[in-house]
Every structure is written in structure tokens, then in C-alpha cells.
Image (cartoon, rainbow, N blue to C red; front, side, top):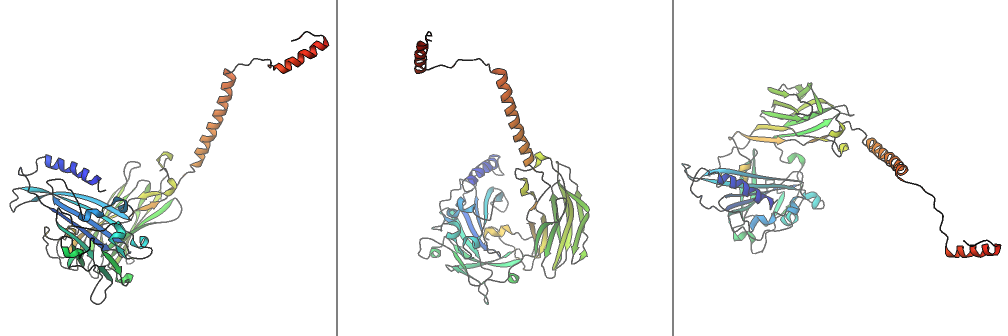
Length: 443
């Protein structure tokens, strides 16, 4: 990951800058900004997000700082990882006379701390990355580490972070106010006389499931039914907001080999029918395009909405099956887009001075924020023929052909003639002695 990304970025930016840009003037040099955001998840996992941002005018050479943690061997042992590259033009003055290109690289990984920690949810930088931070990047003007400590309060302290942070930062993330412990790597007091920085988080006590932070909008998707002929796709939408309702745009993309029965589409909320405000359906064509179903559904406050539709499994050609057909076929997840109400009023932030992770959660206004969710993909079994029978037929046919062809070829090409057996000298000598005694000429 760390070696392939710079090569791709060289090609992208060579095309962007080679096309002339918006200004002929040479952009002034700007130093690097880097961040690492660590967030404990309710499941016990730990999410780590790296961000690097700079004004691109030379090669991005990372000689220290947070880049030492980017060890590809450890990153690919995680439960989830995602990498993104964003390039945009940035004005250098109020009148936008000259423009610079801004590059932002983001890498998000999720560590299963409970499994790797032998049943413990405690974690540290060394346990996750097998390395610690020894110094800040010499090219960075800002280098920070943020640890989410929102679970701590004056009455109930759940987390213990060591070493103690020098400062804290509060931000509004997805409608909730979060508190982060801030570690400035450019500050000599962060290392407190030690050669390396190894952040550790210990759980003093575990919270109940009901007291965990739950987003206002979340969803699950599953397939039900028995047998290999019919089934049902179900998507469950949760609106946990205490008093506000909001619409959700649901997009379903179903493969063509699952033949949907549109008349069986049912949307129920609290046991009652919920009619969508907008619906668009594009039927599938066999082996050409999938089903496309898009709906705008109103979710009442503090409610659970179920969207279900029945389908029938199609029979595929034997050449269309995957190498492991008994594993099943994957169905792409549902996509949910919504403007979720905000409980906490967000102030307009200065994107140049605020932390980089605040750009990952843009706020449209103080009353709502945009969210796009993806449900889990599904694994559906299809009617699968017995692929051992063609294998047996092929083996039997090849064996019969080989035996028959070999026999006929030998009969047609081989010649037969009689040869007298050659006798050894001892046998000939004994035969001549016997013939001489009998008065017969020798051989």
C-alpha cells in the first residue's frame, strides 16, 4: 500500500499539472499535515484512520512521523481497510488569482483487538502496528494523534489513556459531540523524555449495550426462505431519533438470476403499511443488466421499518457457475442516503485550521447532516448441478478412447514374424556330444 500509492499519485498529478492548471505561476511550497485518529468501536474493535494533506509541488517524502506505522504486513491482517486519494484545486488568495493543487491521502483500517489481544479489549500502538512513534515528520507543519475518549465523563470514567494527553478537542461527528485526546508530535513534551511514544488504552469498566453510542440511522439486510426455488430479501431500517422523522432513499441492485416479484414488495413500520413517496423500478435482462429498485421511504421517529420482496432463483448454464459454485453467489449491498437530524448544533468550521478528520463528516447546516450507508452483502445459494458427473464421464470416455485407440493402433502398425530362439554355447556343446554319441552329424 505504501509503495504503490506514490506511483499512482505521480501519474495523476503529472496529468493534472501537465494540463496547464488555472495559473501559470509556480505554487509556493507548503508543508505537510498528517493525522492519526483512533476510535474504539462498540464491538471492541479499534478504527485507525491516517490522513496526509499537502500542497503538491514536489515529491511527498515521508521520513518519519506517522508513516512509520504504515507497515503493509500488519495492515492486511485487519478486518477492514480502505484507501482513498482526493485531489482538488485550492485558491491561494481571496480573489482566486492563483490556484494550488491539494492532495489528501486517507487510509482507514479496523483492528480486531479482542481476538488479537487474547480476549482483552485493551490495545496499544505497538500491539496494532508492531511499531511505535519515535519522532515527528521533519516535513510536517502539523502532526497530531486523536484518540476518541467520548465514553469518559465526570461521573463515569470508562477509558484510561496513557500517557495522559496534553489537551483535548471537541467536535460534532454524525450528530453527536465527541471528545478527543490530542497528542501533538511536534511538541517535545509529548514524548516526555522517552525515545518513543506508545499510546495505550485500557478499559476500566465495560458499558452495557443500551448505553453505547448508536447512530440515528442504521440498517441490516438478510435473506430468508428455505429450499432452492424461492426466497425473500429483507432490509431493516432503524430510526433511533427520539422525536424527529426523516426520509431515506433506498437503492437496491439485485442480480438478474434472482427474479424479483415486484407485486410482493412490502414496507411495514410498527405493523402498518408504509407507502413510499417515490419508487422507480427497472427490470433486469438475463445476462445483460440487474434489477434496479429505488424508493424514498419516510421513517417515523423511534421506529423500525422493514422492506421485503420475494424472488425466485434462476437456472444458470453450467459454464456460468463460479469455480466454487457450492460457496454461493454474492448480492451487492443496499445503499441508503439520508439527511439525518442533528441533536447538537454545529458551528461553521475553518477547514484550514480544524483537524483533517472533520472534513470526513461535512455538516450541511446546524439541523441535519448527510449520511450514506451500505448494508452487508448477501450470500445466496442457487440450484447447482452435480459437477462430478461430467468429470466422471470425461474420465471414463478418455480411458475407453485411450485403450481402444492403443489396441487398434498396435494391430494396424505392428508386424509379426517367427524367430528361432538363440541357444547358448553350453547348450549347443551338450547337444553336439549327444548327437555324436548317437552318430548324428553335429549342429
